[in-house]
Image 1: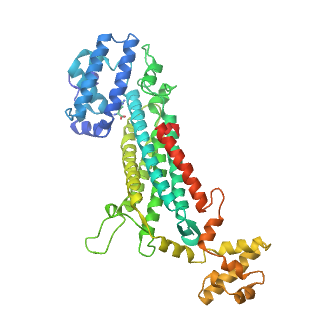
Image 2: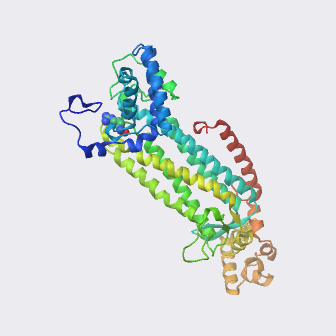
Length: 470
Ligand code: ARG
């Protein structure tokens, strides 16, 4: 034979050496070996039950696959680009071990339905891991939020001091963002959980296969309904990348705030030494490298999404080799996102908070101005007028270098007779947050109630132990 490939029968010449390397995906897809073997087991058992393979062949195949799995786990099986991908590396090894039975495994199957199945199985496992990581980070944040249910900090809009909020409330906002991330990935997982096996190359197979059986054996909800779609669909890769990108963007926003809060001008928090680094020249430096790196990883993950969308654009049905490029970005996104979630979940419990600095910052910038306007409104002043009265009060304070609660009776009377001195005296950041005591508000009581709900939810999710169950 002039070409010794598994598919070499119709070829006159061997593959060009560089093409062999360029064409190969083994470096990237080797990590799906477990799923590839799992899929082969299910396929072989089904072929046996359907009388397509003999019991003896199935027995040999299963024993051979067990051995190969052990070899790979022990690092004994050397993969080669000459065999292109994980599917052919394993199949060739099987044939080497068990002879003809190994050559029969590919009956009623193609690498096209094989790789589509492996990808879904592999990514399903990764999504479950990501779900666990998201939950762990949420738990860390909820614990911190409980500790800081009453800690007052400035709330910002336009990064300008707006109104006082509680740190616990701010942290719970992050928990909400992560919850949507988890839900998006769970959604992708649920939609992806259909089995391509049996679609073969594109049109199905002439053998009497049982697709329900292989789907069930592999934990899928059922077989994909259309063979052309099954082998050419990579929506699930795009969806996972999109979900990962949005989650990474959320993490980058948290990262940015941590970085700001740890800067000397803010001085709100300190991150633990174990998660920071120093400077080789400036002895005083303690840099928040972990949040910075998490912020930086976002580019890589978002880039992966763009790459995958572009790869799939305008591809005709069914399988095209372009689709071999579906793996690197999504695997990398899973790896990097998992790392980001892990480092935050492990770092945040060690974060220390400078309550005095936070409170002082919250009290500056006339952050209780809205509360004063609300007090006027409660006396019957229309809100727009109240807004103007408080605006004049702020101008007066700026001119006289004082805070709203320091305004005397004369000043109040001069600005507007409806502005009562008791109103300004009652202003404080504590009163401000405590007054926002409704569902979704920043009051300590609300934060505590939300924390209790989250503990409950997160524990329930842990018990279910599965993204799909969220
Ligand atoms: N390594 C290939 C991939 O990842 C497997 C499928 C190859 N199929 C084919 N018809 N060449 O896409």
